[in-house]
Amino acid sequence: MVVKNIVGAVNAILPERLSEDVKKNVRAAVRSTIEKMDLVSREELEVQRQVLQRTRHKLEAMESRVAELEQRLAKSVDRPS
Image (cartoon, rainbow, N blue to C red; front, top):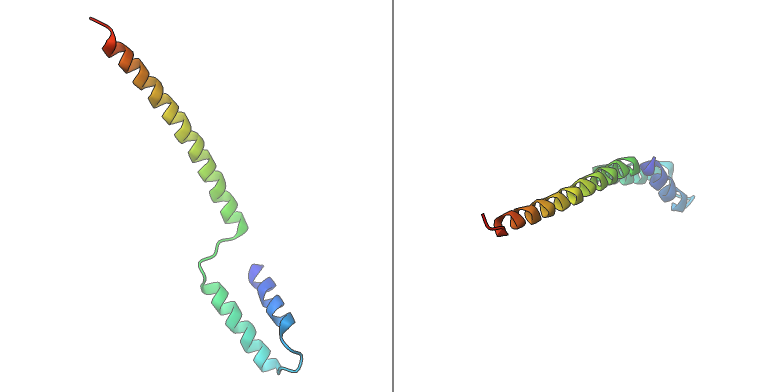
């Protein structure tokens, strides 16, 4: 979809007097260049954003738990036997 939109935009700015062969070659070159790029779709980006968000929440919970355990350990070490 994105490639079609970009190719359409390029096609719109090409002068009318260019031959159809030249237009086809330009469109093919643009399409080929874009397809070689390491791009991701908006959907793939959104999925990765959600995965990152879940991971961040889990990490925050784990950091909190470690801090709590460290406090417990410190208290137990500080208490005389």
